[in-house]
Image (cartoon, rainbow, N blue to C red; front, side, top):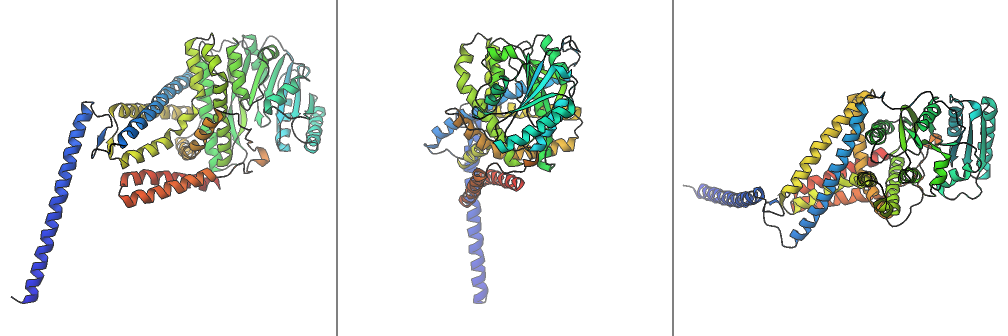
Length: 528
């Protein structure tokens, strides 16, 4: 046989032998992994594995880290399940008979009402709209007044005063504009200042970007006659700039407001805590004075609702009327607004925690208030899950401990129920399924990105009061209110982490990290 053929056959035999050896090695490795996995699964089923099912035994330093992570994650999952159960309970009441409100309409009396409209840096078109709206109320014109209280400079105030005088003469309604020389105390400080110039038995607060229906005051008085001390209405969103982003925000806000504001009140008329939205509400002057007025803080609506509740007052959300309020039109404005809202919950929790615990309220009311004040940190569950999935994949964890897996399963079932509830309410509000799906997807992507800022500022607000974060409205709605530094930093972190994980061969962790990077990139594209 020729030498070259013999050499070729020898080389082929060597390659086949090498490949067979590698196959046997891989097979033996696979069998070892399978054996280890089966042993771990057996331990898992017998509930004797504190770290879950792993492909190999983790390093000794990893076990304490995993155990701490499981505890933190389990607490988040448990709180999330409780919150979703509370939301589902509230939402189901929206489908009950609306005719059983227990109020007498029209009201028997017509008390004088002072309508206070706090403004600062508002576009003139926004102020014109709110004055026209006030003039359209179907309430005796000699029984209400409107006071625009401005924290603007003299030049801006002169324009506001001119517009106010114009509409006062045009509609025959008493409208005045006042300017604070020392604008301290945020919105609450402005309202307290304006009350000094008011004469109403009832005080109505109306945001400049909010419209109420003509029968709003008539229904508010009916609720007051029924024994309530403070009433308001949920609002439907109105984007200043019609974009895909603002439409998604509107749809989700509309549904959430129905559930967590109106549904919460309907399900808690005999127990628990209901909050009035700061965009619109009516309160008895006597009640407002009794609780010390409105706080000089960014959380004025939450603070006032809680003070009325703790003083023994009754708070109601009117089902018969719905306001219209401007919703944010951009990602950055949405982020600013949610940072403010989440920080407000943290501020109130810090200020009132001891008083809530020591109060004479029933235990169920205390728990319900604390649930309300701790809802925002749970929005970080999505981001937390991504990081936990990356860590578990690196340490070779296939399944977490049974109690963690059970909590995850419960949350998935509850979230499916929540999704079903949202779709049912969307249909009730005449939103199509595709519109709802698009809106939820868009808001989920943006919510994931915002969640990191929310948890950061929520924790920050536990230690100090934060400055008011301005949300632009009207013709100023497209104004940039903050940057994307955190989003850019997180995007870089996710991308770099993905590259490192891929190089090191942690492919599942690479997938999770890449998902995080993609979501952050999609958010920044939408923020442009």
